Image 1 (cartoon, rainbow, N blue to C red):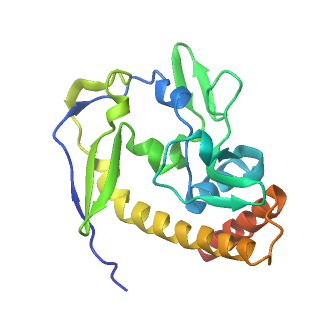
Image 2 (image 1 turned 180 degrees about the vertical axis):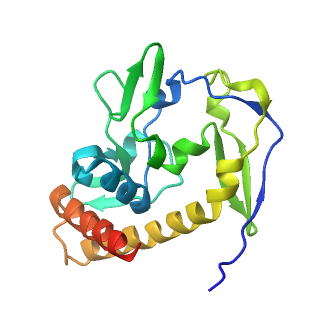
Length: 200
């Protein structure tokens, strides 16, 4: 069955990644169940071993599903080390390399660009908080957006599906059908991830 086409708009901007790792240190990385499934399969790790729940009241209003637990609301993110780097970073000389690069989350693939939906069109722009911090902006040739073009449809669908998954969890917590503990959430998420692996 043919999938619906996704229309997208991209800025004309110069960008070349310098592998400085600033984005890996500066930001918490939100993920969807699809990101989690890929990383788990690639690394052999259980999702709970590389994921964390970041308190919503300690963050801005991210455009990500909010997970309700019995003690508060959270975003699903990748764990960090004490020095602030992502747990999948490794130093190679003076470069900070992603050890899960082939399966890294789309939010990482797209950085320093972000996207939003506007009347059915996916619009990309430079993340305003990256300006001044990302040394790759305005460096080298114009961004080709090959990665974004090839994956934006899947990314939009994954985020939409993840919202439904989290809404289902939140509904069960609100109705008292699930105890709303961290352990219960990761059991729920891992069952979703295992199902997505079987369906892929």
